[in-house]
Amino acid sequence: MNALAFSSSPRSNANSKALLHSFACGLQAAGGSLETVDAQGCTLKPCRGCLRCNLIKRCAIRDDGWPEFSARILDADVLVFAAPIYFHHVPGPLKMILDRFRSFMQVRITEQGLLHTPWQEWRKHFVLLLTMGAPSDEDARPVVELFEYMTGVLGPSNRLSVVAATKLALSGQITMDAAQLRHAYGKLGLDPDRAEEDCARNQGYLKRAYELGNSVVKR
Image (cartoon, rainbow, N blue to C red; front, side, top):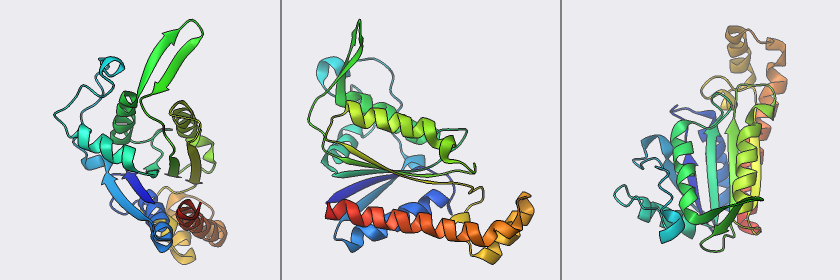
């Protein structure tokens, strides 16, 4: 079982990176392997909407490393996307990578709507590890809906799992203990008396990410 992860936060001590670390620990404990790509440092070019992929069955952009990059995507059993929610969606560098997934399929316009035909069969487990400052995971709904759509059009054998961690505004907040969280809440204008409860919830997110990493290998 091999996994390819895309880490997209610009923060060095990002909450989404902590979730990804827990996921990786769980996956590796079960015997899986994981490669991580830093989306922020990625040199891929954006999709230019030329639609040539509909004709040549691959992306027409060849001078940015995409041929090798796309081969790694196709070879992976599990695709992991670790992202903070910035203005209700993933950071731009990750969205740019997702746009290039267009070249994995033919898209035809019909009177009834768009018809998607992948160039090859996909049987992958997609994993979303999302963090956000909002107290409700509804803030991540546009991202989850995008991935529900993507996994569907790429093939019925794909699966999607989501861990969406909320109320995380500061770098490294998900790993703070109750005392650190109480201090942080004072600065953020949040109720310090919720610190212990929220600390336990944050640990629960990390545990869920670990267990998810473990389970994708054992399935």
